[in-house]
Image (cartoon, rainbow, N blue to C red; front, side, top):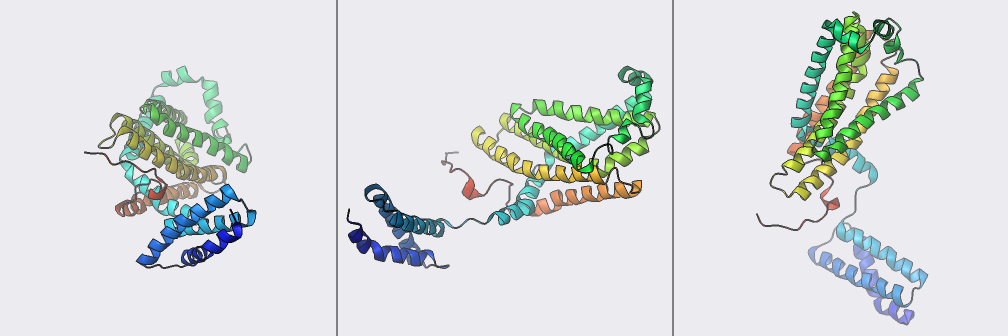
Length: 334
């Protein structure tokens, strides 16, 4: 192939495509022309690459085809816009739409934790079977192991450790949903038992106020995040059992994408809880101030999920990825 002749023959088409691709607004005829020229120049690029791969010409046509493709398909938003949209629209909408799962999980879990705590605090034989009197005293005394847990390590490393541990619990809840949600129940139950036992032991020693003063600043948001993860895992498990009007594959794909997306937001809330646990919980602030910080953060999260999320959901947001990023689905009857 004679490159000089080839370039001279198609130079006009390339210039026209370059001009159309650079315009912000196009009329109907111009859009049709843009698509036609894009297809032609794509063919030209393929011919040059196959017959006479001149580096300069290949680079020129590759750049032109790329610009034209963006003009034809529409350019994607930049990364920061995607991040902003995720935290202001997608994540809160997904939280709101899944509220019928995680709110009941939260209510049942807290009720069970309180019941276990009452049982532990009012039945000495249960405590004695679980932990000896000496160890109980060491755990619950002023400055004992429970209180030291929050201050015996540097705050930054403690925050990282707390985030890792809680993130692992949340990940288990999300991933185990694929097994019909059964392992999720076990993970949630283990978490509830640990909470109830801690409450009961400190209450039996007359130091429930200390326990709550150290738990509530970070624990409100931390537990809520775990409840959300548990609810999502159970929802995924139920999707396998009852996919609704969709095929099971489509339902799982949609729910799976939503869960993967929500895991980013849940990791963020756990990071916030970890920072509070490392820097606020063991701080010298009065107990009322530390608890107030935890309550404010929890209220803000609930407003974020249930108010901002409702607005996003009403606008049609479902918490899934953008339509442009989803696989094409073949229409089916019924």
